[in-house]
Amino acid sequence: MIQGASGALALLLLSEGDHPRRAAVIGIALASVGGACYLPIAHEPGPNVTVDQLRAWIGGALGDPSTPKIGVDLKSDAHLLERMGLDFPLEPTADNSDLRVLSFLCDPERDHSLEALARDFLGRSLPPMVEPGARRPKPSAWPVDVGRTLARTAALMIPLSAALRAQLESRDQWSLYETLERPLSPVLLEMERVGIRVDAEALCAMSRQAGEEIDRLREELVAMAGEPINLESGPQVAKVLFETLGLKPRGRTPGGALSTRQDVLEELAASHAFPERLLAYRMLTKLRSTYFDALPAEVDPRDGRVHTVFDQAGAATGRLSSRHPNLQNIPMRAERGRQIRKAFVAGPGAILVGADYSQIELRVMAHLSGDPGLVAAFESGEDVHERTARTIFGVRGPLDPGLRARAKIVNFGIMYGMGARSLAQQMGIPLAEAQAFIADYFRVFGGVRAFLDRTIEEARRQGWVATLLGRRRYLPGLESAHGGERSATERAAINTPIQGSAADLMRLAMVRVADALKARMPSARLLLQVHDELLLECPTEEAAAVSDLVRTEMEGCFPLRVPLVVIVGRGPTWFDVH
Image (cartoon, rainbow, N blue to C red):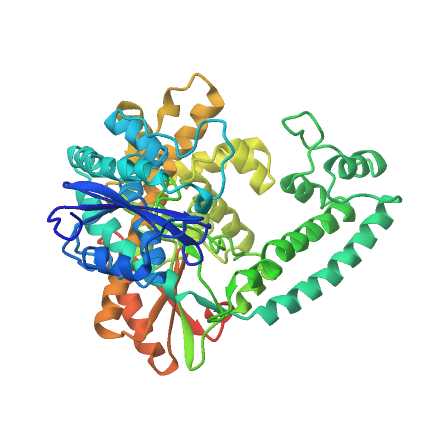
């Protein structure tokens, strides 16, 4: 049945472990139009089939790129099968269907689980793996009989794939899967295989230094408090701030306690050293626990590299997320946090190349709004924040850097749907002044105002917004009777076409760069995609050529009213790249 199948082959892997490069396959359920089966591999006590038997029975079907595959997460399936010595190519031109990615395209905020998809698209309930209320043992301890349930589930994946495709085709979105998401999966798979080299000793040194500073800060804070204090306790910190030191409270938690969150401490830091030192303490403890101490444990001892797992269906806006470890949150602004990037290094004889889109979201906003002022600024290569500052504040001569900084906050605030109250808080100015800034901005950039109004109006009418490439985000909260939820959804309606389009362009650029490298510079490798940056590794002598290739592919990935600009740097560590 499996080897002779001419149609699609659905596969459902039962595995144990979170990381696809380290998890163990317990069994494989397979289904085609001819039937379904389950092959137990590592059940305790068994019976199980051997890897040689697997290779003989299903190796041909799995390794045949002309056989369409259907899976829940084909990228992870590829890792698991490859570790068993089974070939599972994810060719970008193959007619494969990744159910999780298809579901993400249908509605990024829906439940992408097989149970939810079977219920919503097929009207079917999947049988539970174990009886409700029963203790759930690890998968390897499940009886082999569970394979019957898994085989029936795999059989449902074939009509489920057809149903998801039908919905996307009815919305003219199927091409988004064929031309963007399907080709992106093998790119991400290869990036996960390659990983990035990490200097664990450098991280340990950073941890030791941070530990010494944390101890010193703790002593200073206890001395200022005048009594022993648990700095991790919100109530104890609040008592010192607002009773012992007599500082003015700046808000409460949802539970009614006086708030000690970061923005409150930042306001208070101007009037006393305690909140300023506490902010430094919190930053260092977070850096130490989240990065300095945690990252070395993620290094694969076989190659000295970290192999993060990219989630193609992770964020509603379309941005990639990652885990094991999460490298999307590596600090990039605070200087101390940026030091972490010194631990991400090139391999012997190689160099890192970083290519970063310059102000891509503002450029997308200029394209979508068609505002003449913004378009002209980007076309002429002006500093758009300086232009905004000069236009709003009427400055003709030398520009105060503080005014440019304010204009930058306004530019990004408008793009994210920020209101006057939030803008006033972020800029530290009176509400009336923030309202005046916004009014002046829209007076000058009327095309932006029209775009924002039009976007919200269309979202209310059709219930969704779309990116440049057609990715949709549904916004039921626009009809909410709760004002706070409705306002938050309006902000999402404004931001999604901008941030989501930028994310789509990055995905498109990744596919183009990967194809170009494969054809012309095969020794260069994509490593990471973080924020608006691609990070690559290549032989040192090829750095200039790789830099030119990447810049060309990224800047030419999609035609906008304004030019896409990519800033390229290179160096021995990620820190040195930019």
